Amino acid sequence: MSNEIIEKVKRGLEGIEIGYFDTGQRFEKEAYYDYFGASDKETRRYAIAVFTVYLGNWYSLCSFPFLDRESYLEEFIKAFIEHHQQIESDFPIMYEYIISFLIRIEEENSGKYTHSTFEIDKELHERLKREVLIPKREYLNKHTSIKYFLREIRVNPFFKSDHFEE
Image (cartoon, rainbow, N blue to C red; front, side):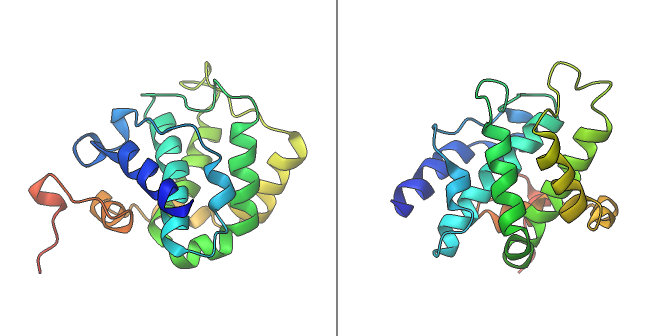
């Protein structure tokens, strides 16, 4: 099953190297959050990439992946809270992007995100803030280049500026 998950995500990632988070990536329906704690690191990498991309698409206002499936966002957030320390250790760039997107979406929610609110169970939201967002708020100041994100999700860059000099 893990190979199937990886292949589904790879298909969904096609084009992200050209449009980054503004391309509205679409992934086949799957409970990707169930794989945040998978024993296989590659399966975890790609499952977490889905969450990162979904949040990036939401933040860039090109798509709102959590609107059509009630509790989908909550399931991702539960899995993220449960595995956030391992995610931070294994995939630091995705972790940074997830934290930044979550904080920015929440803080800017009253304005440009009004038709896509950050509505999850109040206790879960408080837990997310207490255990992850508040302690990791410094991630807002990191601004790691997209080329590191592309490398972490194993996507070949398109733009010359996104290539690494070897």
